[in-house]
Image (cartoon, rainbow, N blue to C red; front, side, top):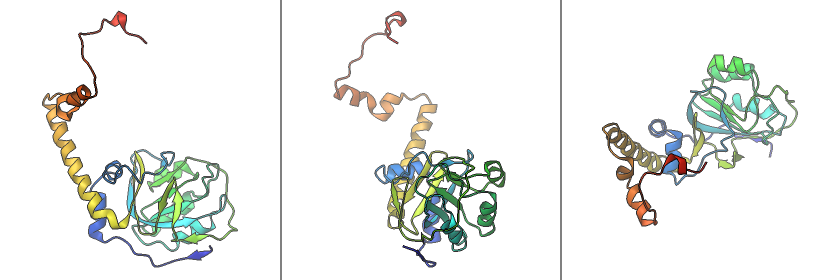
Length: 233
């Protein structure tokens, strides 16, 4: 469908603050280990992060016309989520478009294809998550859609869903699940911090995690120290 929707529902500022309070991996765990995009989609530079409402884009592989249309449609804080057919050899986003995004206050780009001008994008610091770098150019011929549901990295993303990314990858958080998932995620992170504090004080990971008893319940047995010469490779 060749159609651009300019007005979408976005999470409230309070909901976005809640979404930013937990990591993408925690979101993934807290929503029953779901929502993680294909791990092939990674930041172009370690340390880059993004979190914002999705502006979804459907491009024809090798064509970035609708990506440019989406840049002109997105609002400050939005994340462009571009389904480009998984064509990793294309480089339909580079320094010029990154500059355009930054001038509009766009929070980042997630694309299931390549990008180019890697050194320049890294210098700009614009959060780009892609399948890698590719210098192959794209045409601007085929219309598609903006702000319709898309499939990217094996996950269905709707306009206004929260997209969160860091060095671990990218996760999609459904707009209606923000409060439940993020509060569960905060509780999980607090529990993990307490565990790490105890570990720093010398606690045993097997006892602290309950794993020792779980191993016993599953029939695991302990014996004395194995001689190094007896160990198999």
